[in-house]
Length: 411
Image (cartoon, rainbow, N blue to C red):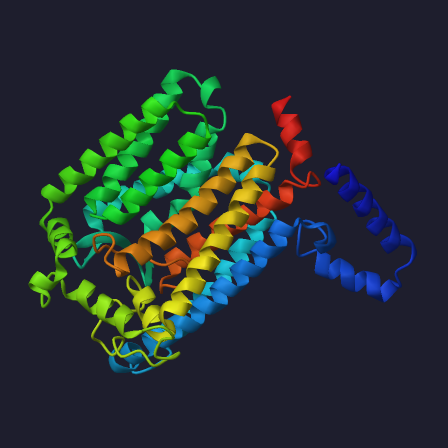
């Protein structure tokens, strides 16, 4: 009934535009509406809230990054706005990518995702051979002045490829299932080899949740979860770099000047925030006491400046985003868009929670950016891509776009 009412409303709006609007006014409206695949008046309320959330999240992230990075930028780069300017420069193409994804059918994204997925898969393989090693991890490839982090850029295509696999799991032949699962497993191993335990864990969680929603048997899922757990343990035991981080996570105060230094300084920053925080821009720990204060530990600076109240509000913000993502996935009209929406929500929310867990000492110290907030062009581009897909799924749930081509391909 709701969909029929929306269709009638949409027809009435289009008739009004043709008959009652003046020429100039109609031109202005046409220009504005041409930026979006659907007129704003018939957007679902989830889509309207989501685009507001994304806008607040990205603007808020730039402000927090500017506060957390100005001291180290002025000391090391000679320009307090060095990291802020670079993030804003990356935000512009990020918004452009968001717009392109928003205006592309999910069906078309699913079609060409496999090619880009395997290109980035190969680049991740190259990082283990010729990648730049920073702080014990080889995660970056250097192309002139540009640094690529394929393990970040591949995240949107992980969602799309998992959707291609799990959307009709029971109808796919066993040989195709084995090839896809082997590819995903090999990808996780290559990311572990960098080593990048946090991204490998996030990737495994993403596949597991999407598999659960796609109808994979629980026994199979628990087998894969057990295999992933033991693989992670094996990686930690055979990698001194990861072993030190796990032992320092258990008791960071035992070696607070060496292996536990990061976590101790992060906890001091969070603790000194108190109830209301030190105030925006007034963090002490960012004065080069806390390493990676504008990337892997940016939440600690936020907690110090905004206190327990600010942290609670941010967690509430993430809860609202998760709820909206769930609502979008429920309203989706086919398995593909449903799984894409679930994957987008799980990845952005899961990555945020894992980042917070690291900074609060609830999880071993590892490098994982906070979406839309941590410094880094690769992470920012991936976040905008994922947000664009989620918003597109919401717009396609109305039935006005994306549905006709889907019916044709299914027939």
